[in-house]
Image 1 (cartoon, rainbow, N blue to C red):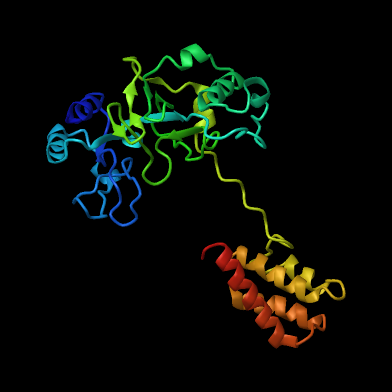
Image 2 (image 1 turned 90 degrees about the vertical axis):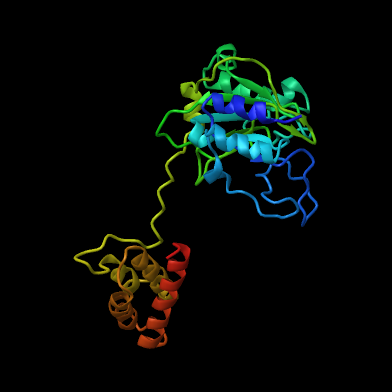
Length: 307
């Protein structure tokens, strides 16, 4: 039976979709089942469509694709569809929450805790109402997990990080292309994806937005011995080298040079000023050793910063 009606139903909700492999498709190279992956454009060949570029709401394009491959599973690109989908999986192993902030759930619920149980706990923890939270479009996956659909705030980036890895994952607009989920009607080797209700997709509640939004990257710590620059020179770093304790002069020069590199000071300036301080402090090897140490420090710092 063709899965075209399910693809069309997703498009009618204004969701951007693309075809993934039919149930049981195996990679011609590895032999692995790949029925959740973007569709093989040519049977027997490993090349896959670029789903982030292919995803569409164009019915003509959709009809053509499912006419070519009637059993392709329809998948929804969450980013352009304005969706955040929360994926609650079933328990796969005992005591999977040990060592996490949620391990206390095992005392209440036993050794096997499902993703839905963890999500309920998160909802309560953040002050949400479970009944209203789950009053949204929901799909049961082939492995009997849940997909809960929410409208994501426009212009806000979602995180790719799982709230609780392995049990509660999210698919949204995070990363370069965002994520995707199989639509209702899809069939994999584990079973069929079934819409559990006809509810509209509700807005993501504030607590879920806060939990799943992309957080600013933490500020990078200043390198050891970092000092404010003075008038475009290495300033206090020179004093760090000059006043280094006996036996620590080479180490002080190296870390001062890394800090100077991080501050954008040209390597020749660092060699001149930091190397001069090293020589003044009677560093072993003199100017030649000072220059070698500074250049080595710059190379390592640039490698660390990806420059």
